[in-house]
Image (cartoon, rainbow, N blue to C red):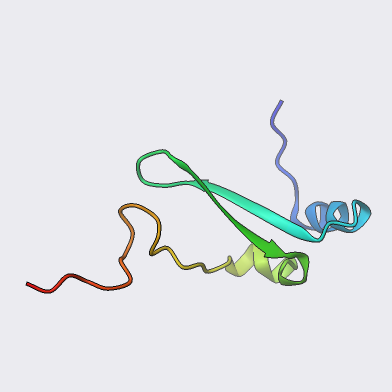
Length: 70
């Protein structure tokens, strides 16, 4: 059974487990799993509202760091 956790529950669990890092997982446009890891100090209730930015230049089909010149 899949359960949707409320943001407060996630933060509480991180503290209970004395977590140091949070690994966020997602799939790219082709369905390949990707992940990014953040220190727990970056995770708070506002994180769940505003989201977290990341450098997507190394993910296939996302923006490149440098665009090729013709």
